[in-house]
Structure formats: C-alpha cells, structure tokens
Image (cartoon, rainbow, N blue to C red; front, side):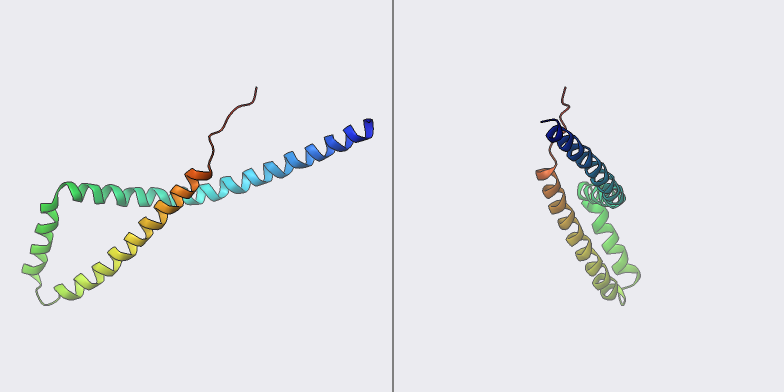
Length: 111
C-alpha cells in the first residue's frame, strides 16, 4: 500500500511539473498574440470611427479624384488589395477568438 502511495505521489509531482511547463508555453504564445490583437483592435476601432462618419470617406475619394485623376485607378487597385487582405485577417482573428473562447474555460479556484 505504501509503495503505491509513493508511486502516486511521484506521478503527481511529475504531472505538476509538466503542467507548469505547459502553462509557461501557453503564456508565451498568448504574449505573442497580444501584440497582434492590439493592432487588430486599433484597426477595428478606426473602421468603426469611419463607419460613423461616411462623409469622411466620400470626401477622401473626391479629393483623390480631383487631385490625381490619372493615378486614381492604380491607387484604388492597390488600396483594394490591401483592404481585402485586412478583411481576411480580421475574419481569421474573429474565428480564432471564437475558437479560443469556446475552449478557454473560466478559472475556478479549488478550496
């Protein structure tokens, strides 16, 4: 009986060490993704601000057409490609956030 308890205690100690290592790896991964999520949050905030003031967008488009009508289409094509890439990034981040929230259980303290 005593040998079994010793074996269980050793196994428990090993599992605790493994859990600490995994927590450290997860914390490092989350720290790296925090910078990306802050950047994406800033972009979403800018998008929301522009959504509240659509005349700013119309004014910018009109100004581009007035100042450089010859280069407007080239600029618009580049901007559209960048906007599409940003949109795909936002969609991926939303999916990743939904996935993370599905598996991230709230922490419960055991007393």
